[in-house]
Image (cartoon, rainbow, N blue to C red; front, side):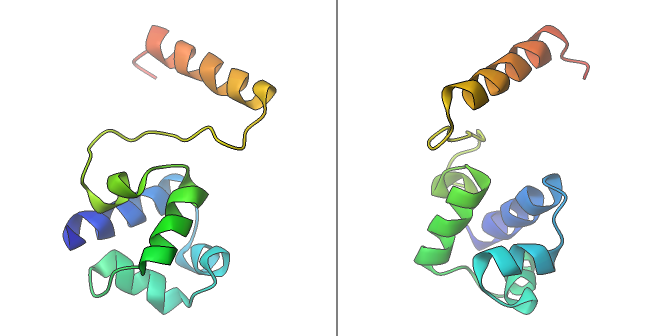
Length: 98
């Protein structure tokens, strides 16, 4: 599970174009803490895991590798923002080649 979590944290961070220092600032930890999470040297505390899931809009189970489908939580988004996301999803379903 640690191996999956370290890969997922790095994947989520890089897919959003964040550097380790940027994620560390958001999570109120050191860059070396984020590096340790991504290297599998340590794992985030339960509280930090929840913060990561809220920040990246994914479930804690996804970060831990307990589920394979990445799901995006829409909580906290207004109707307009949700509509934009749904329109993007429809576009990608119609144009799967990207």
